[in-house]
Length: 279
Image 1 (cartoon, rainbow, N blue to C red):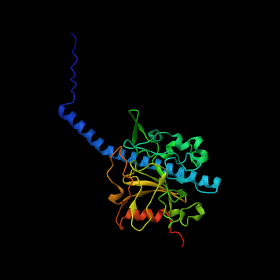
Image 2 (image 1 turned 90 degrees about the vertical axis):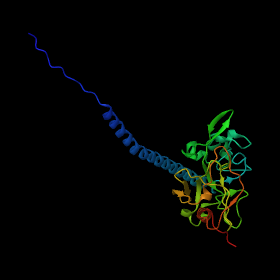
Image 3 (image 1 turned 180 degrees about the vertical axis):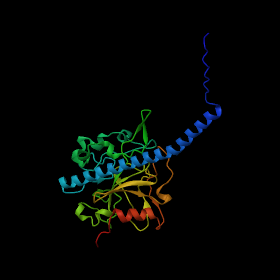
Image 4 (image 1 turned 90 degrees about the horizontal axis):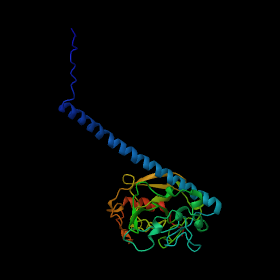
């Protein structure tokens, strides 16, 4: 007589148990995702700090080779002729602007060999990615296609600048030896997508503060800034006037916006952009 083996019953998960497991997984995801997001933001900031550090090294190397600071021009043809030499060529545009929008996406304007004779830092950088913040996702529509723009970085107008926004009551530095406090004078800054065009960042130095170009806030309300002594840091902006609402694809008016004399951001920019000229 055959002995029957006892039947083994395999019990599956009940609905309640499945719901508990799903709930635990959702809770873990809710706990982990902010940490992952914060880690990604920190990584992007570290990358931008490194990018501006390399641009700053290129700025210093240019002076060694040419015995003057890299030129910085505010004209649409900046960096493309001997008449308007500049550290970077091209003029960035957005969808609501007229002009050659292809300059907004052309990395040759950053590192191309044909711009070398006109003050370009391209021979020292060689990498167009150094000029772009990872959080700058601005695009321009060309032939019906939205293409990423190439540059987030601009240079202090008082660092060997030639443009309409320099106040002759303040020093335009032609050599680094003229800078009295290199650790306190900024050179490169991240500029907002709806403000940036040329590579020249203008600051109104008069007592009545005015915003001409607007710094970026891509790093949790801060911009990465480099200084003449070579160090790089984040600058956290504090005023609402420095952080106007963004309208993607639309450029700011370009008309100076006057702020109160108590504006902390403009005071910082004025104090770290140049020094008064001697009488």
